[in-house]
Image (cartoon, rainbow, N blue to C red; front, side, top):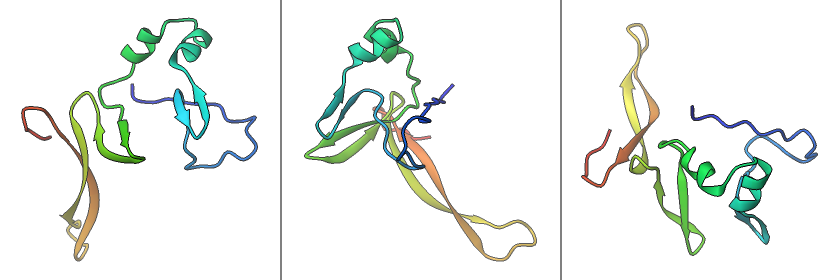
Length: 107
């Protein structure tokens, strides 16, 4: 499904919320897709094809992410207000993810 687990046991300073790069570049360090494929005893194409449609791809432009894309479409998070349960007063807010496809629909 859409779950990946990484063992960070041997990384002393690892903390919840740290950025993790599975392949690509972070600062001056780089891990190539071909290198990861070798470790996994497969080919780079296999790794790319095994990523699910909902996996977020962030493309940077001058260091900033102008768009957050998945294979479903462009990903947007919106805040929505919901009525509380029957006994609860007021509204609560939550974040909802929507995808805008090339055809312009969202869901």
